[in-house]
Amino acid sequence: MSAALELLCAAVAVVGLFLASTVFFDVVHLVLHRMLGSRSSVLRAIASPHDVHHRWIDRELRVNWEMQTANVWCHLLLEYVTQLAFTAVLALALPGGIVFGVAALQTLVFLMLLRDRGLDVNHRPQPIVEVARPMFFCPPAYHAQHHAHPDAFFSSYVKALDATVGTALDLRPQRVALVGGRSAFGRALRERLCAVGARDVIDLDTADDRRAGDVDVLVLCRPVPDLALEVEAYLRRAGRHQLPPEVWALVPEADVAVARHYYGDRRLLFRPLLVPDRADDAALARAARLSFFFILRGAHLPRTAWWGFPRWRFLSSKPARPGGVPKVRSRADVVLAA
Ligand SMILES: [Zn+2]
Ligand SMILES: [Zn+2]
Image (cartoon, rainbow, N blue to C red):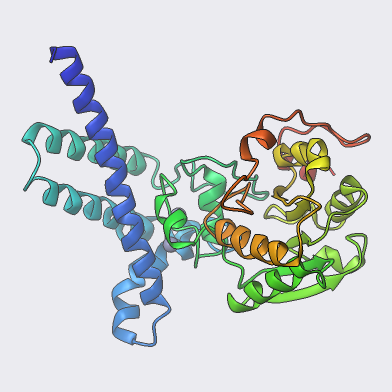
């Protein structure tokens, strides 16, 4: 193997192992939150340094400056030491050069975070949270969701942990509205929502209902005659929330162009649920259960069937922006300008 290729392989290994060490911290992070919610005062006390991080940036995503120094000691240092511990274990099995490279990268990142006193891109005041686009890495909007809903969104750099254990959404603090909730899809979904303890599940005939203003997730459990009409009615009522409103919409293939637009629309997190018109009740119930499984794992385009799911056909289809719908670059542009 040439020296250049060897160097490239070593660099890839270092970056891969660095990301693995961040996933290890994510696991520790999840355990700390479970301990914080435990009935044991000893476990709560052991995990309490992480609570400092959440008091520094609270659920309303305000930075409490008086906690900044405490956050450096209780969170930044803890995260760094956890990652180093992972690297120390690697030293038992891997060449010294690779291990040194991983520790050097972890130290470099730690020093950069220290320089910013913790105020990295993930930790800045966010009066309006953008939609975290579907990707393998965690953008700032993703971590903001963890501060708003601390019992989910544990992943810090890559979404491996949340995608594995189903913590890419916490429905317990969420108000969910079902349009067409008496359909087979709606009944199966309601069962799942109740099982995970969604705060409130209400039925609406249409999104154009004043109660939609308090709703965090609108689910169109049957294909609607005019998707844009429903989505825009919901956005008028709930579009200014600090966190992005969500719409999960049953979409028959015929409606792909408008659904494809909303999938990329920056004003909301739109999760199309692709189910053909011809699906019977059993297939609809299966689609509800399967899509819910994948939504909890962070899917923006959740699978509704194991076989024949038209993922690529949907993603490669041409979006059609409905008439009168503005082209926007960010939620903040729309909400703060209003
Ligand atoms: Zn944080
Ligand atoms: Zn946390």
